[in-house]
Length: 182
Image 1 (spheres, rainbow, N blue to C red):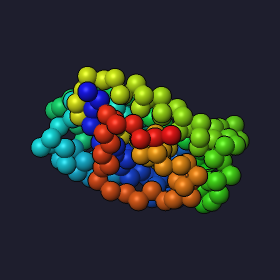
Image 2: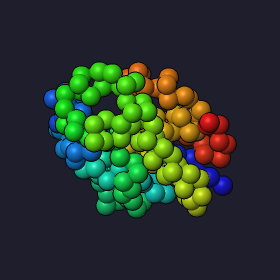
Image 3: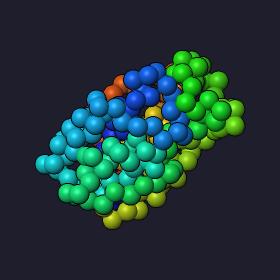
Image 4: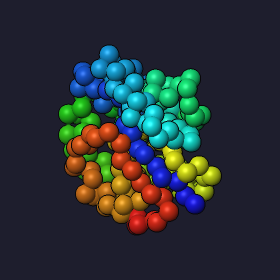
């Protein structure tokens, strides 16, 4: 039976506070992010996952390790869960990178990838996840990761997501047993 997946965004980073779009750069959690990572772990204490999958970028790994490290399920790093690669724009101001995301829906960022390429990368991870023996999984990632779940599992067109701001909440649940996507 495919797992129930809880998607969580990585905790607040120093770049988030500075208005920087980190992209494929590692990033570092801010003090606010450190506290949020601990809170994420507390939210899952009563119903712990069988496994945690995280982007291999530092800010996501730090989030996973602070939330679950040393007292719980295995943490597996997977580079397919990375944020969109903004190429030469990794580490640029948010308004430069996200000011016109629709422009990069299908056309890659300079020396990077398009949002559709990023979502397709994560979609491969989601397909593999459908075949896991775990019953409850936490995935820690980025905007591109969230969009992939919305697109592949919920069937939301990427064209609808590209101009949307991520409306943070404490986890989004996805039942991979019933594919509803495109």
